[in-house]
Image 1: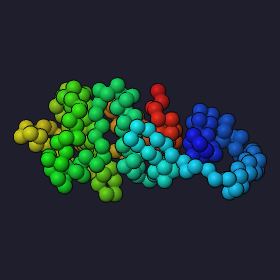
Image 2 (image 1 turned 180 degrees about the vertical axis):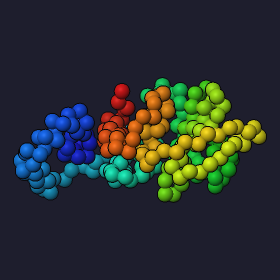
Image 3 (image 1 turned 135 degrees about the vertical axis):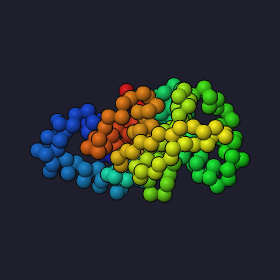
Image 4 (image 1 turned 90 degrees about the vertical axis):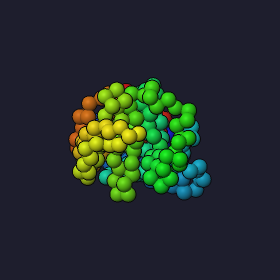
Amino acid sequence: YVKYGSFIPLSSLLNNKTVFCSALFHRKYFISVVVMKYQAVLAHRRMPAFRVVYNKHTLTLEDLSTLDDQNWLNDQVMNMYGELIMESAQHKVHFFNSFFHRQLMTKGYEGVKRWTRKVDLFSKALLLVPIHLEIHWCLVMADTASKRIHLYDSQGIVFKECNLNKVLLPVSLTLFIRVPLSQYCRCLALGKPLQFSQGDMPTVRKRIYRELCECKLQD
């Protein structure tokens, strides 16, 4: 509970899936009794609220619950995972805070010009900009080497070019299935192929949950 905010260890679910599921099926009554026992203990003992604290980020169980089922990740989860991605990519990639786009749209360049004053963006191989469009997330990726901008969006929004500092850059569109946007960021930043399907999402979401709780990405 202290480590993952749950009585079920995610390591068991991820590393011993077959064994764990088999044991769960045959020992369902025993496991139920154990869980009820711990719940009874919690009812009479005050426990600190579950938190994941990492640098300037704090995640609660409510934040982590956005990884359940088909939910969209919230800003807190997205931003902490983005920082883990940057560190895992040895800072060759820059992940913009999810509030960057909102600030840019409402206050223009003046509202965000100091956001990256300590970052040399031109030294980065990729720039990842998550955008929350009310009912879903999309991702803008700028490839500094090819000078191309890639848009990953599940709603089919199409752009052919982008005006960046008065220079027209080609934009490619990639449609993605309803998966955690963080999975796309992870694969792009670490140079991993985008080889996953909707059926992989339960496992992917559990892995992201665990990585957030442990404050590091798995290999």
